[in-house]
Length: 456
Image 1 (cartoon, rainbow, N blue to C red):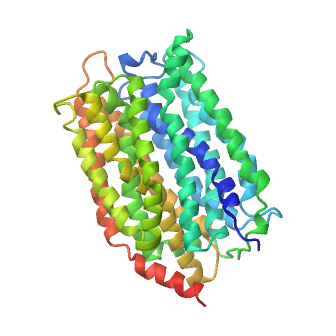
Image 2 (cartoon, helix red, strand yellow; image 1 turned 120 degrees about the vertical axis):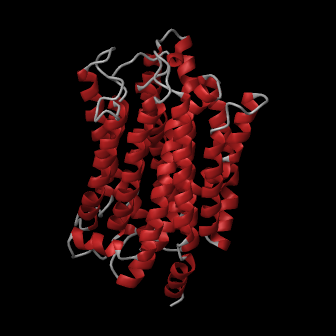
Image 3 (tube, one colour; image 1 turned 180 degrees about the horizontal axis):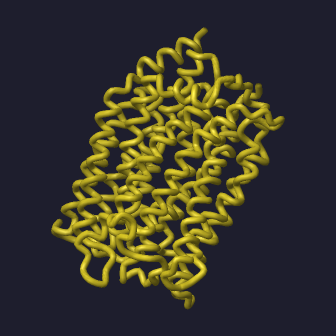
């Protein structure tokens, strides 16, 4: 097997820039786009109000179902990928053929056929959100499984997940600048909805190009020699959930990911509706947070290598808990709102850095631990099992957020301050549960087995 170089790691991680872009489009702007405030200037394109079971909005229901589809397909694709006998490898072929439809679906979600609320628009959004999650799974499950297969050295793995996160965050950063691009497009004469769509079109082209790079430049079999599992998918999943370290870590990432989903879905509302700042100001605020987190990346990388990953994860979740509860008082904090928003952005920089880098690296440790113990490579199933659980949490958040944000809304508006406060409280509660779960993770035991195996 060839040695994995830093250049190869960078090429492998490039798709995370695209994933960062697409994730920001859906997590930060989807609800904002389809459940618009008056200030946004975006027309109402889909049915509003509680239409499912008297508590769910159309967009909340559609996106929640999308996450369920995503979660359910994860283990199916993982099982097929783990057992693949393709001559080009178990992972790369999936990535090659799903890249283009993955990107196109991300764009078409925002391109409804009519300019007013209709059942056709509701169906359109549902079809492309659900298709997006299917192709996301087809690309990302094999992609994520390939990294722990290629890189078995603990130090290199932290480096890889640092680059992995770096590209995701820089892609997210470009996504966070969306309001600025939209503002520029509006100045050229475009209507708000057209300005948003034009911006997302540019993002989609960039994303597809980056998604296609690893499948065409990396020869998987030069770096990976795997032992394919011979047991059924069900048996593989049972095996994964018998691993106590995996269960504890997955629980922590479930709570942390759900709390983060609440924050990401509401960030534009927090800035515009609670802080009273304009859309274009959100670019400065979110860029401050991202740049702050990037500055901390070398520090997090060094700490993870020397002191372990558990402690910074605990601190990161605690800081984010505090941040969520601070949001509840943001409209009564005296002084300049923009200055307060910048301070808040810097405050969450540390947990952003930690939660972007370490969860994947921690899970890779557990997967390697299991491979050493069992002698079989089941990276795909482990990754999918974790993904299934965490995405179900995201699905719950997606269903709840649109229903919460309308609480207390005045007539003619889709957003209420009371609802926004509730999203912050619930999000903070999930981070508290994450702290409790991660506290039970026995990192030293996992790393000791890996170190012993390496020294043989």
